[in-house]
Length: 524
Image (cartoon, rainbow, N blue to C red; front, side):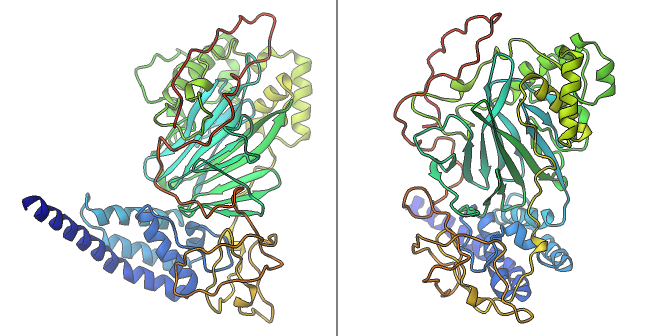
């Protein structure tokens, strides 16, 4: 009897907190609806969903915005008013509703905050958020960047292309609770798609794909742009070299989250010198430490031996700090494989530098890089890649993030569903200056229409294909994926057989690689 009483009390307390938060949030919802009755309604409900780690409502407007992108369309004065309202409603630390307010406060702050960029490109070279640059010739799976404030994490899989060079072969991401992976090579199953959402293959048959928890995937040229509902962004520049697919990865995060990041791209605190501290400060560090391998004047004056000592520290001790484990990995694995299957701690056999190229090789590589417009701060990495592997250089200029402010929001006559299966009907857009505004992107005709759940009262359904529609359904005829908070042991898609162990191109002076020890299978 006492147990039943305790359970009833807990349920009543939880109900009270939820109702209290709803009452507190209502003025913000009403303020957003005064800005735009339909878009503001969706934005308010999405902010609450994000704070509760739930799927966002279906969109009922023509734009393909994330909640963050829609919030940037709200006038700045209104956003500052929202910020004040949030601060007035913050409860003492530790309460359930306070955690929700922190999540909502995060997205509002992001809408008024500038961004910093970190990159992993070439074979590979890394540029931290604080502009420290270095070469990172390793084989395995690593935390590229992870936030301590939000559901944001990016992991990279580096595979050997030869005994001394590796490339980014795959990227795995936690996009606000959705586990999204792109495999440029070595897919975990027989699917034709390079993309996996929560373990299932998806195909982008149009230009945009809505993720359950509010993120968006956009595809243009050879670039995949993944936008978080809270505003972070990753751009994947898909390349190939000698039949080996690889990725240049650009990561956008916010300056107002300074010191909240960890991983190979540093902590984004504005100080380049501490980006190589790692998790274990007790690890031995070389006597000479440069904080910019390429373009650093002190490093150029150092001996080639000192530079190689520095590179060895990065590839061994620093790399070990940021390797993922079977418990933390976000990747999918074929049966019989795990993160250890893709790990080789002996790599590289030899640390090579730009100084190891002869003068002719350096001059020819520099001329090619300059002709391609490579900027000075990435010239060293380009010379390295061109001189040793002749792999395609990174895209110039850098891929730019979508700018929602370039979109004119037309008046919506009535809400209508806009999902991965349904297209917003154009007749629901009121004319602007005599012209009917079109959705932000031109899209392909929709083919597969399914019955989604509505997030607003009785939205009008689109029952006919539209000329500017799109279809980004999964490769299998299944319903929209149902997302749950990120898990470390999801069910994995099956594969016909265990793939062969990644191998390196043979070199005459290289020792024979020993057989791979048996390991337990990875996640699932």
